[in-house]
Length: 374
Image (cartoon, rainbow, N blue to C red):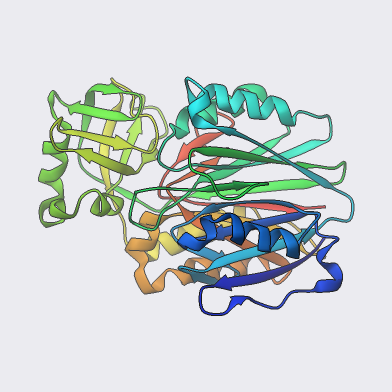
């Protein structure tokens, strides 16, 4: 595996790249947060640089290049494989009745006996990530690892984009299959949030929309916990996610707030909040977040003498809490995985990982990593 990372920004355009190697690149991952990156012209410029590569990516709430986070820029990671190949398939959300069927369709399209890993890049606002994860879990066989994330839009929560062999589009889900007899993928997913307040019962919900907790209006109760932060919803909700679990013996999952409906007094989360489940609010501190990023790196670590690709998907809520210390969670990943790791990724509205209820589960507020090597 050989690689390079280049950068685009509005002031300087594209940075230097290896022209001799550009035509040989097999995969280009691009993460971005600038309106110009949505244009056909911008995509065609990238296609001219890497004419034979599969180009895919997502809008972000911060794009990762090694141990640095870039806003407004685009970060491009170009990979040449020695013994492996990749495929990209994509579907529009609006063409399906539910997200689970999208996962089934995309997973089926990638099926092959040499498939080893699937990386999912999904629209972050118009899809139920829990259903999407369930679809991939149902169709992909054991031995195929699954990770990914929901595209971000800074802290604006307006529109997210996915690139899948075409200019950026809204309402898209892309899945990249990694194939090869010698290809391996290893993932890690950790959070670092602590529960506080009373555990309560979700008394009315539909999929990812929460209507009532303990028979009280969900938004009203949530605001009572947030205090002064309530006036900044939904953005401030990233600092106070919710844990949900089926019963007292189940492992909790973290859910991030995406939207509030003042008229209906409801909360909309990035994943399912099933009726009858137990729920509790979460809080954290900077030391815990950084420590758990290190745990995710440890879980995805492998003995490797050659370069290997690391895709990091971290929640925008972690970034808001960490502030200027945010790059420290990337530095501990670099320290743990070593100098052969090619680190890219983005800050997201949700992370997809194999840690959880099924083979692929939607998480929020985690650092999710996958290391891919030949």
